[in-house]
Amino acid sequence: MLLSFLENPGDFISHLRRYTASLTTQMTFGFRTPSIHDPRFKEAFDIFDRSSELIGSRIAALLDLVPALRYLPAFLLPIKKEGKAMHQREMDFFQTLFRQAKQGTRDGTTKPCFCFDLVKMQKEEELSDELAAYLAGSLLQAGSETTSSVLVGFVQAMVIFPDVAKTAQMELDRVCGDRMPDLNDVPNLPYIRACAKETLRWMPGFMLGIPHAVTRDDTYMGYRIPKGSTVVMNVWAVHNDPKRHPIPWRFEPMRYIDDRQTSIDASNNSDATKRDHFVFGAGRRKCQGMHIADRSIFLAISRLLWAFDFNRAVDPKTGEEIIPDMNDLAEGIMTLPNPFASIIQPRSSRKAAIIEEKWVEVSRSLNKEQQWEVVPEGLIWKDEQHFE
Image 1 (spheres, rainbow, N blue to C red):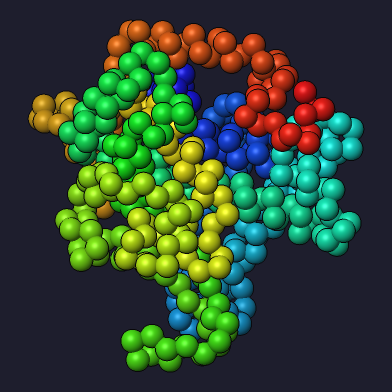
Image 2 (image 1 turned 90 degrees about the vertical axis):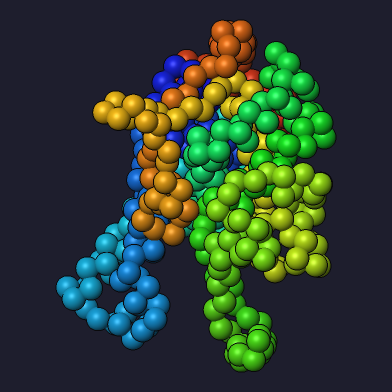
């Protein structure tokens, strides 16, 4: 990712998407996503983007409000036909990836990943290929689409609020110097941790939480909620409640400077007022990948700020700086900023050289397809080390 920012900073949104996609495809299916030109990468985000647009459309909202409209014939309801076609396209894509991983498990070429264990438990759990593929595909979508949206929001925040970036860079310079930050630095970078938490609050990935079902009759503020009812948490409203977060539109990491909870700690806190954010849901069906998201977001934020300055573009006609509009979001259910301009430059020639040196070092472990020849130590499961 850092090398891509260095070589082609103008396409930073695609680089962030590739970073999160590659992390997720490696963990889920056992392969890297080496380039933004990878056809699998393009297909995945084409599907994710269009699905988000359909789910977040006014017609979809009307169908939720008046469920009987769903029984209209497809020629009167074009979204119905497109929705089915999109689901089939998604299913075909997920099944292709799963079958490749399954075949690789049989012939010994699959690297340690979620699908490796999923294949082993298929017979025991009576999982069809279709269901197994959708389980794996759901991890791909959740792990790549939401995290990349959060990171795009982070870059936008650094452009809108440059003082935050400067404060974070001062901490990184003091703690890391010319050494690239890693996860061992987490305890010593409280402001970076606070930036990660504030990013998740400020641009949470989803405006609404994942729908839940009520297991028994309940009441809330005088309203009766019958058993089986669908309940959707308004994450955006909670995150922008001025009673919880004064001046909510402002990106202010100091809100969390004394909060040492991990996302798992916070999500298990019985006092909801002490939750840092609600990106990963609530109740018994919280996101199971929050610890991975915490780490990947920390690494991305710390290394991007360590390596680069995020300056505002300048209007060639007026000579004035262009400040992105934080309310200009893409259509759909994601909280993803629409494309915006930024001048991204390495902070020093030394840091640029370190990025290039690190890439050369890592490249020695990749084959000609840019896949791992030797699985990095951090990706090896102790009971599966024979895959080296």
